[in-house]
Image (tube, rainbow, N blue to C red; front, side):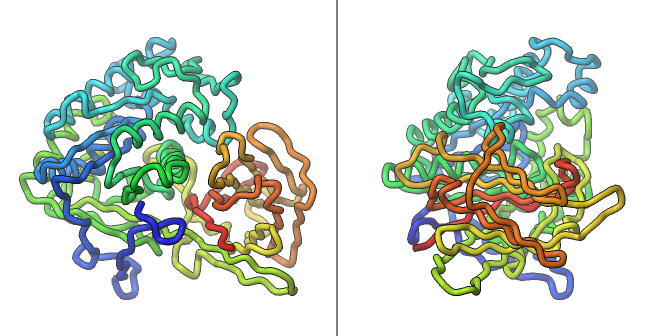
Length: 464
């Protein structure tokens, strides 16, 4: 992203359809025009996301003479339901899962060729499907990498991957993403959305954000355009509707949306590329074609900027809901159902006296027991080593407060919890987070550590 102060997001207008909160496509501004000097980098969490979300962008970029590179984060080797329908068998051994990944890689190369890309324009990282959020939040030790309970693999198994044999750790993923960015020097990056309900889509956004922060001053920061794929009940109607526009989900507000309008021939080309992912289409034929429409949609939340407050008893709370960015979703896979997010009725942040304060409100009880709150907090600072920064998970419910740093229980001084009716305020000293400049935050409601619903990942910027 281009800089304004520490950090910049593309500014756009969000205009809501009166009374419904639905953004009409004709009211959303268009992406900046692609030019010959552009270098377009598209990150896909799984093989097919690049076509679903950005086949039109690829065509427009190539038509303008720009360079395009596609990077597949995982090889989608754990989508067993689709594989069973496609192959008529159940993968039970390691080589069965790797074979599944190889099938999806070939489909990607073929689909991208139909859009005008060459094999050299596609990079596979090969990290474990549906496991990268665990790596982000827990696995940052190369001596003890993540090991999939399904594949029994703990290192990148694909010989043509960017880092064949790399351990499944956060360091490996972050290193590969930074390598791609440094080598390609993109001007525009398209990546999965922090509110997407798929775990890999969310974690990829966070890794990209950290990579760009780490590279500040060493590269020209690109513009970043997140795209949404997984959101329960969206888009509607299901199936191919090339005459309809893709509009933002009602659940997601406060986002500066932009779009790329597609011509009929570009929609046809996109449909053709999507049709190449036979292993995925056979499981749920209408779903992927739902994205071959008149436009492609991109947008992000603005960062939450927290001013440093000192002294006094009061707080200047920054409430994301006031900006319309409150959303309910779940850390679930494709097409999973999601809670409405109604268990969390309020959330706000404050930065005061070298501590982060988080205020939230929950319903006291739901059927089956009390509801609590779980919160991921990961700090970043310039010149620091993100792999060494704490990756905290804090739980608050009627059993008390529990804190983990990655996988290990942590007993930290200065953490305080105050309850008043249905409202809870948690104080976390910044020293516990490694004295960061930026914080990556995710909050969810839970019952006995099992998630009910959660908010989108957000970026907190500590000012002053």
